[in-house]
Image (cartoon, rainbow, N blue to C red; front, side, top):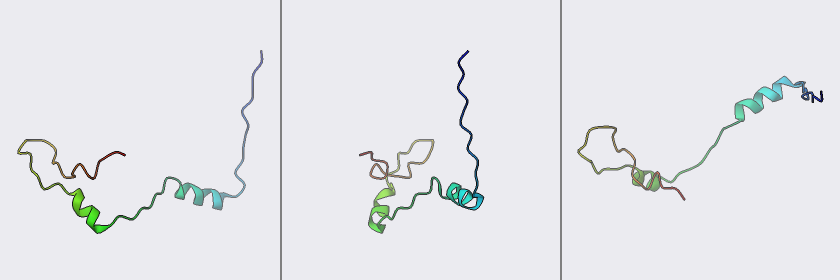
Length: 62
């Protein structure tokens, strides 16, 4: 039977490893106030359910 063993890696610098885990998935972006004002949807649908808080500009996919 031909089995492969999985490589084993040991963390040697825990301080750097923990810092990297804290930064993983972090994202920062800046948005102009004028853009944020366009995001809010002021049109009411008059229907029950979740509020339509954001306009189509905020959720538009490129």
